Image (tube, rainbow, N blue to C red):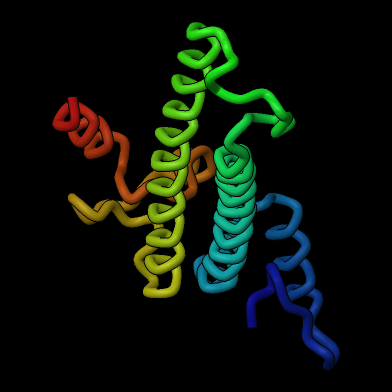
Length: 160
């Protein structure tokens, strides 16, 4: 039994209680608590990924609703023929930008789904290129990343 995270229902020795208090107060995780810490980290990652997926899904749905309305926000009686050419060009550019955003956000949603798959398979937090662990601070900032910093920079350089 781990003195840092469990207590016994039976009477424990004073040494055991002292060890538990010391570990809890110091914030040190004993080696035998790793599985518990891993479970907590897995749940936190799942929550961060779910929140991120909800945000991107909401944004994509909002943009798609806007794109479904051919006259923009109001859908009024004004026909595209009756509008000034500059206004038509602006609306066309806005729609093209929205289409690009949808494609970009949907790609990110696929990346988030891939991260959920890695989480289920037990490979979340491991770089898909080099196999090294991805730093915790990076995973907190970009929870769906499949790459460590070094390999992410390499991928970004390849894309340019």
